[in-house]
Figure 1 (cartoon, rainbow, N blue to C red):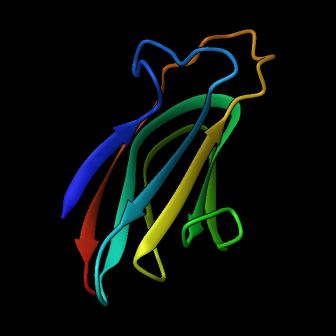
Figure 2 (cartoon, one colour; figure 1 turned 90 degrees about the vertical axis):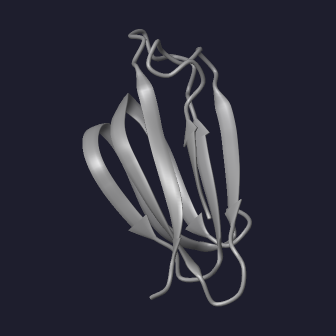
Figure 3 (cartoon, rainbow, N blue to C red; figure 1 turned 45 degrees about the horizontal axis):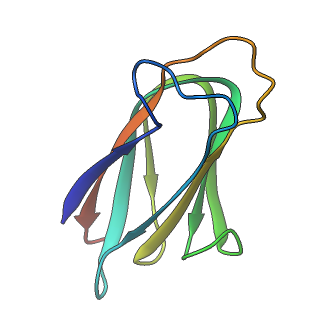
Amino acid sequence: MSGTFSSPNYPLGYPVGTNCTWTLVTYGPEKLMITFHRVQIGDEQIIVYDGDSEQGNYLGVLTGNQREKVVYTEGNVAFITFRTTGDNQYQRAGFNASFITVYL
């Protein structure tokens, strides 16, 4: 299983006050490998959790400008948040990412 996701309007810039969540699910003993190919979000944050909510184990945070950041889940579900503060005066490109099922 594989797929992609991105911030709204990527790479043309996400709107002020963006509030997005993604839940990625695979089956059985499989895990997820999530690759953030390009991140341009200034002071905003992308947070990755293991499980189906923000109560899951914290797997990582991305901020600023990054390339090729890879996150592996511990289980078969990942919950990802991208919330902007609404006070960012500079429009950033946002981010794009992909995920695949892996056996670890």
